[in-house]
Length: 485
Image 1 (cartoon, rainbow, N blue to C red):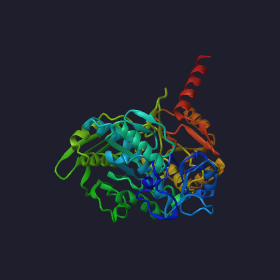
Image 2: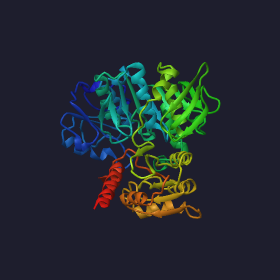
Image 3: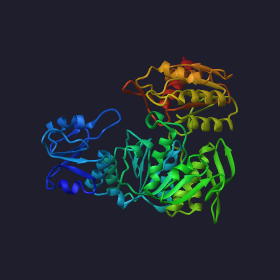
Image 4: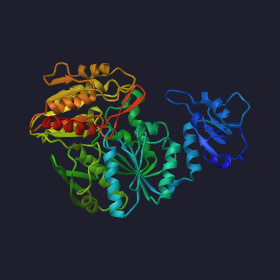
C-alpha cells in the first residue's frame, strides 16, 4: 500500500515523505520491524518509542510516523498523536473491516466478560449470526478460540482481528472495552452499534490516578456508539453519560427503561421480571449473584437494540452455559462447594461473597490475594470486605509480579485488623488451596477469588502455569491414592 493511502485521515503536522512510497508492513515495536515497514513511534507508560527509531531504521523501516521528528534526515511523518495515528493506520491497512459488522462494546469494572458471552449466545441463536468475541478470557471467531494477551488488543492488532472476523463471515462482534484501551486509543475510530456500561468501582487507580479519570476514560465509549445501554443505579452513571450523543437505554432496579422486578436469588441462579415500557418478561439465568441481575438487564437491552425481542432473549438465557472463571463450580468429592471467580476488585469480592452468604449451608470461606504492581489502596479494602462477609479467610498470593508477596499480604491484612473473623496467611497459592480443602467442613462454600479464567501466576516478569482447577483435581487424586495405600 502506498504511504499516501495509508496515512489518510491522520492529523499530519509536517515531515519528509513521499506519498507514492510503497509500504510493505506496519510495526510499532522496533524488535518486530521488517524492511519496508512504516514504523510508528509511540510514547508509552514505561518507555518512549521514539528512542527506538534508530533501531527500526537499522532494520529497514521505510518511513517513521512519530510525534517528535528524528534528527537524522530520514523519511518521516510527524503527527500530533501517534496512538490515534496507529489506530487510523490499522483501519486503512486492513480496509476498515469493522464497518461491515455490528459491534457491541462493553465497559465497566465488573461484569464485562459475562455480559459478552451471554450476548454472543443470544445473537447466535436468535439471529443465526456468526459472532466474534474479544475479551479477557479469550477471543473467538464463531466457535474458533483465539488466545489473547490483554482485554482489548493494541489498535493495529484489533484491526487485524476484525479483518479475520469479517473474512470468516462474522456479522457481529461483542467485545470488552477496557479503560486502558479507551485511554490508550486502541479503539480510536471504531464505531459501535451499541455500548454497555455495567458499573464503576475502584480499580486501576495505579494507571488512572483518580476515580474521576477512571470514569472519564470509560465514558469515551459513549461518544462513539449508536445506542448506549447504562446502569442507571450506578452512582457514576450521570458522569458516564454526560455529553454522550448516542441514543440511551437505562437499566436498573429503580426507574429505568428496562427494570428488574420481583427478583429471586438462589444457589441455582437468578430470576426476575424484566419490565420494559410496553412488555414484561420472566427471566431466569443459571448464574448466581445479585450482580447478575444488572449483567442480564444489560444483555437484554443490547439484544433488543440489535433486533432481538425480550421474550426470545429470555428463552435463550434460560439455557446459557456458565462462563469460565465466573462463579464456576469446581468438582470436589466432599460435602462442600468450591467456586472459582475472577473477583479481584473490592466491589466484585463484596458482590460474590454476599451472594454466597445467601445460599451457603455452612461457612463462607474466602481465599484471595491482590496483584503486585497494581493499585495498593484496594488491598486493605479487600481485606476488610473479606473479613466482614466471610466466616473464614485465607490470604494468599495472586500475581505478585515484582513485589514481595509478603508485603502485598501485609497490606491486605491491615484491613482485617480489629475484626473478629478468623484468618490465616498461606503465601503459596497452591498450598493455600490445599489448606482450604483440608479444613473444609460440611456445607462450606469455598471461594477461590482473583484468578478466574487465568491459568498462570505472574512472579517477577515470568508467567508460571497455575490452573486452580488442576490444583484441586491433583490434590483430590493425591488424597484418594493415600486412602487406597
